[in-house]
Length: 126
Image: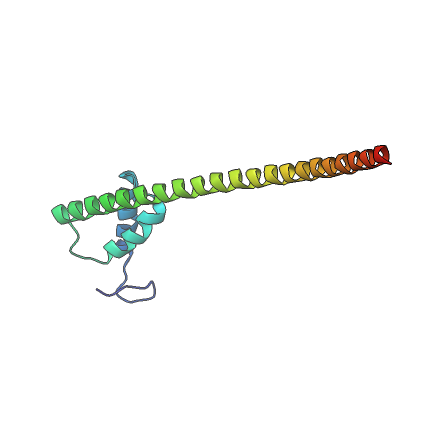
């Protein structure tokens, strides 16, 4: 099947209306415009799309969009989950940095106390 461009002699106004009508019909059945418009353009090229065949094709498009939408929603949910995990990991890393700083302070304090205790013991022995 040959794609028709607006400048072609064979392109007529009814085809443009058919594309618009198909897109509107798909949108009325719950298909998103971003999906309905390109599909309607492809379907408008088929001159034999009428009657029962038209209904069957449109139902098939709606079913395909439904399956596509489920996959898309699952992908979006996965992306949100990844964002949440990433945010939690950044928070956890920040808390670990704070803990590390606290441990350095405690370690320095323990070393000073150890050195001080050693000096006091050595003063008593002499």
